Length: 175
Length: 100
Image (tube, rainbow over all chains, first blue to last red; front, side, top):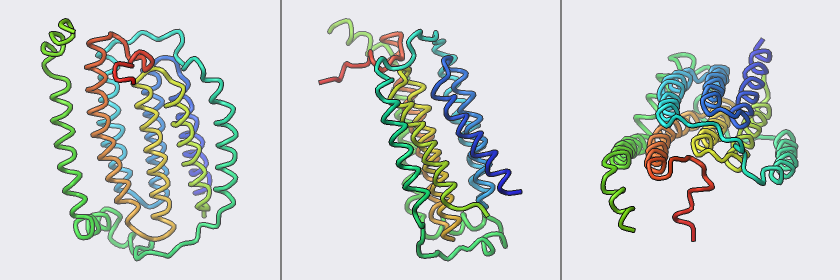
């Protein structure tokens, strides 16, 4: 049963990724990206990461993607006739060869490693959210605070960039 | 039980698709979306290894990656809006003001 779900989520997310890269209309690309994000969140469920599933749906599909669609509709882009880079055919051959080689190496690898301290049974006892919270606010507290400061900086940077067009235009006409 | 190699293969395919998108698309917004595909591929990898190696570290790093992706999207889209005001285009080939 898990194999069925895994193959569905994996194939659907790969198809959605290819559509995101290949579709012509940017809004359609955004919707394909939404499909990709939701199916990736399904993969998280199969890996016992319910908290990341929720974060993926709320933050990625709910906030980041809506931001993309907002900007797309704000700019009102027309579809370019030549929407691929002019030399994209040169990239396709090496990309196919490289991906085949990478896949061969990945499937061949043994993937052994030292086991950590959080087996699936221990996580399922209190739930994934409790496990993530305890780990985050004990061992990863400094990184958590750094991410908070980083997000504040990103907010301020985005506001400063998107505000006050007049000085930019004045500088442009002088130059 | 799904083997770990299957998750890694899915993640590799998604990453290469995103990389191809960054290289061949000309619309700046689609390039940013391809970067999001690559970040998602990295997240799948991290969560899969976190599950199979029984450690919580992978999930936490994936969580931080999602936060960084939110900041990246906000700043990147603000840059797109500023450039669009001056050029009325989001074509990456026309953004060569800083080119040496």
